[in-house]
Image (cartoon, rainbow, N blue to C red; front, top):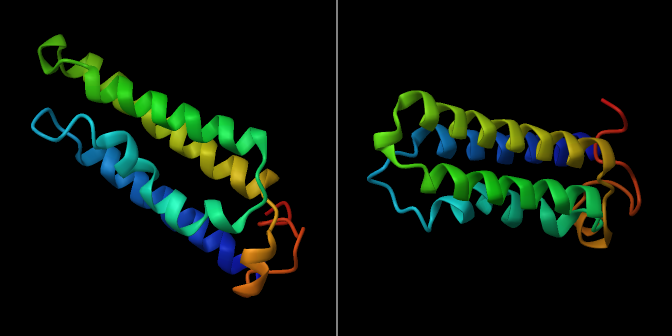
Length: 124
């Protein structure tokens, strides 16, 4: 039930972190922000009630991804690493926001992720 949706949230965050770590200057800068939130948007966002706290964290992920994509490699490994760390932190906060504040919507309930209104992780 809700543990299944929580597992999907965790998997989406893991995928986003993997993409953030794999990004390098030769990758498409325009694609990074959308690639990072791709699994979240496809597998999670449509199954939880809209919540401004979750949406704000998603926006923070997009902003951090743009910042990483726009960080010139010639600024050095430390600067690029700091931008990458900020993106990974934003992904972590998005994951925690969904687990903490997210509740199953009607679409999620139809898919067997819990009852409508039920918390995604019930404080776990």
